[in-house]
Amino acid sequence: MAVTTTQRTRRVTSRDVARLAGVSATTVSFVINDVPGVSIPEETRQRVHAAVAQLDYHPNEAARSMGRRASRALGLVIPESVNPHYMEIAAGVEAYAERHGYEVALSITNFDLHRERRSLGWLKQQRCDALIVALAHNDALLDDLRALCHQGYPVTTLGFHDEVMDSVGPEREIGERLILKYLVEFGHRRVGYIHGAFTHNSPHDRLSTCLTIQRDLGVPVNDAWVRRCGPTQDDGYQATRQLLAACAGVERPTALVVVNDYIALSVLAALHEARVAVPDDMSVVSFDNTCLARYAVPALTSIDHHAHALGAQAAHLSIERLAVPHRPPVHLGTRAQLFARASSGAASPL
Image (cartoon, rainbow, N blue to C red; front, side):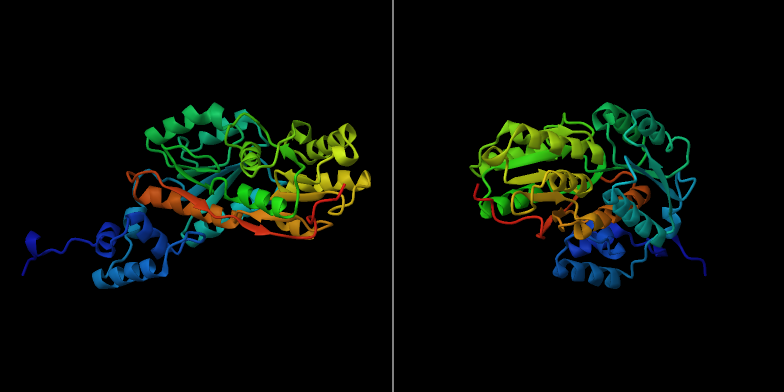
């Protein structure tokens, strides 16, 4: 006997699971795909799994394969390859993508605007299905990014938040507040900065955030101890030498906050050459908690923002966007964790 339309059973979707579990469709996706670094209560996970079992839900892989996708590849754009932080992000993207049948096309732009803009063209050229970007020129390329999203091309940004597109990044101010409170608890009132970055125009960059928090903690900011420089290790090395040349003894900071582990290595080298003992004369702390931090001499105190999980989350959002192109933008953040090591200690009595 032929099956009539009314007798056919409608396919169960992730939205059906979400309604039954009382959560969002995005939460269902995170639980089913076991996305790392996403904080979901165990009770919520159990509700989702129970709803999946009750509805006998199975992801529709055929639907995931439909649409514009031509390459079954994710594009990843990063500014440099020498910084292990970006390599850890890339490893997270690749691991998640591979588990879900995608390859990763990598573009290393070396902070060049034209190379970044050229990479954005991969989507229209169908060289990749979705794009994950960590850009040095966010402001210059913002209109290009928004235009791609409005045209239906999937873009996920790393460390840069815009309401139009999906984004992944460390939760704002958590790591910076952890590191400043840690230094204050060790008695540091003279805090300096080596801020190596491609641009220094953003009101929400790491340095601006740290200075605001420092003032909130009642510790005065001395502009003479704030050194802005470029993104290379030599930039950090020269900035540290300049700071040391400009002040001595009690005129020097007792602690330096460095923008990342990669530049912190050159800061340690400059301090060693100047016979400034770390941490006895000056503590050094940084961000990213890469392998460089663990094996530096002395080992670096550093904030971990879980780069591998950031990459995996970005890959997940990209693949989910391909499956559900019209869902609202999702913005994910990973929480910071402080790893205290030998490069930091009590403030010098000088």
